Structure formats: structure tokens, C-alpha cells
Image 1 (cartoon, rainbow, N blue to C red):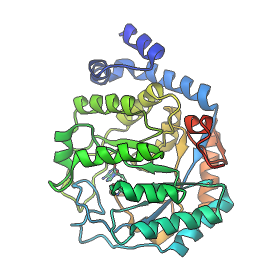
Image 2 (cartoon, rainbow, N blue to C red):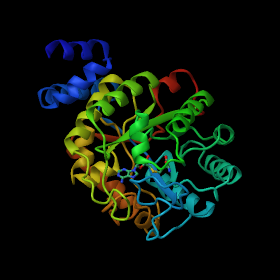
Image 3 (cartoon, rainbow, N blue to C red):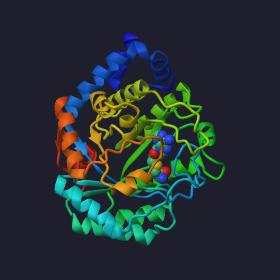
Image 4 (tube, rainbow, N blue to C red):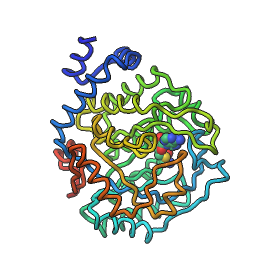
Length: 353
Ligand code: SAH
């Protein structure tokens, strides 16, 4: 056991069997790995937390993922789309509060054509030239990703959801393909985005074997960002009666990811904050270094329901920002107002500011 921890500490790398052993004996390792993660976080980021302003700009979706509340077949979802002006006004409010990264997320929606998203990205970059734009609009052809990168998009979040093809097939209908999602991640990487992958913890049918595979994949792919949050059921989905993912396992995985990818940008997710009222703070203390408060208009926040009881403060963006700052201060962390690019991109001069 000690050997494994020493190996992890010295090499920041383990193999599939070793990850599986850690996961199967989590209670023996949890404290030590959390400690290691906090040390790594301190060394690389001090007590700084990066903020990203999340804009959920549409919940229309042509996919039918079994876990997701905005899936095509959910007739109870009230659909909406924000237009460019509405998106820009979210950015404006966010900019005044201090955000320098905007994350644009939506369902998979052909209404937002290549050109429409190109135009939105260009407008944000023109109006807020010192800000980074992160897109999270799902699987698209490489030419779309290229066009948006040319327009100035800096980062892309596309959770791989699971590194196991059979598990993927249990979470998605037959017309969705694990291979295509993996190819998309590689395309994004090849184009030059800062790329984020990730998983839900405790998604239906997930085993420790699957998670060990996810960790091996993350280690190999070495993404700039990783999104990890607990699965939470949504009433109007086929997984309505499944149980939520474990908060403790989520925290354990955040710590483990911090250790194997020391510089990674790792958010304490909204799902974690929903599953546990102190979830976001506990996520930061476990090794996460990013928070993504929601800048969407109130009506959009309420309709962008991926899962039950999604955290949605109802507060104005500026107030929410102050509350978050205070919460983080109380656990010894300060928020920083800069773009917060991945170290590798800064060192290689690949960022535009
Ligand atoms: N359509 C885009 C982004 C929207 S969903 C895409 O597919 O990438 C963003 C993430 O929310 C998903 O990748 C998934 O991991 C997470 N998510 C969806 N439903 C969830 C649920 N019920 N519980 C927790 N997380 C969920």
C-alpha cells in the first residue's frame, strides 16, 4: 500500500491495475491522496482559484442521452435559445464583475450553425479582447471546430463520459458513438484548443473497472481541463430511479486527477455543489482550482436542467460572485481575475493575450 502511494507521489502515474486497487480500497488511501492533491495544488497554484462565467445559451438538443434532462425525448423540458445580443449582455455583466473566461454551453442544436457560432465567438472576442472563450456544444465535424478556433475560441469542453465503449452504449442510444466522441476530442486537440474531457461519477452501470479505464485515458490524453461531477438523476429520463453518484468518490477522484495531472484546470462542478451544500468548497479542498458560476439569465438557468434540483441561487451575478468569493476566502482561497490558461499554453506562447 505504501509502495503504491510512493509510486504515485514520485511518478504521478499509475497503471490500470494500480488505479483499480486504489479504487477498490479507497478508504485506506483517501486521506493520503487528498493530502498529496492539496500539496500539488499549493505548489502549482498557491491559494488561487480561477473563475469561469458559464452561459447556458440553449437547451434544444437533438441527442437522447439516457441520463440528461434536456434530452430530445423529454417533452416536459421548456426549450429556449439565447440570441447573440443576450449572450453578449451576459458577458458584459460578467466582465464588470471580473470574469475573463466565458464558457458557452448548450444542447446539440443544429439551429446554431457553424456560421452562427463563429459570429458569436467573433463578437465576444471583439468586445472583450482580453477574455478567453470556451465552447461546450458537443460533437461537431472537425471543420466546425476549426472555424470556431479560427474565430478565436480558445478552449473546448467535451466530456468523454466513459472510456469504456460498452459502458458508453448503456448510457446512450444506438445512434451515438463512443468512437466519434473520442475522435472529436482528438480533433480538438489537433486543432490546438485547450481541451477538457471528463466523466460523471456514479453514472448508471459504472464500475471501478470503468473508472480505472477513465484514469488511464486521462493520463494518456493529458487534457488541459477535466470535468468531474456526480451523476444526479433527472425525473423525466430513463434513469429517473437511479441513485446519485457518491460525493466522497467524486472528491477522491478530483484528488487523484490533481496528482496525476498536476497542472490541470479542474472545476469544482455545479453538480458537486448540488449533491452537497458544501460541495464546491470541498471540491476545492480536494484539489480542484476552478469555479464556474452561472451567468445565464434567470429563465435560462431554470430551464437548463440536466438533473433534478440543479443549484441555482437566484442571485444576481454580482451578488453570487461576492458570495462565492466570501465562501472561498473562508476556506483560505482567493479568486483571480485573469484568463487562467493552462501553463503549457502560456509557456508555449499559444495564448493570444
Ligand atoms: N451537449 C454538450 C454539453 C452539455 S451537457 C455535450 O454533450 O458535451 C454537459 C455535461 O453535463 C455532460 O457532458 C454530462 O457529463 C453532464 N450531465 C448531463 N446529465 C447529467 C446528470 N443527470 N447528472 C450529472 N451530470 C450530467
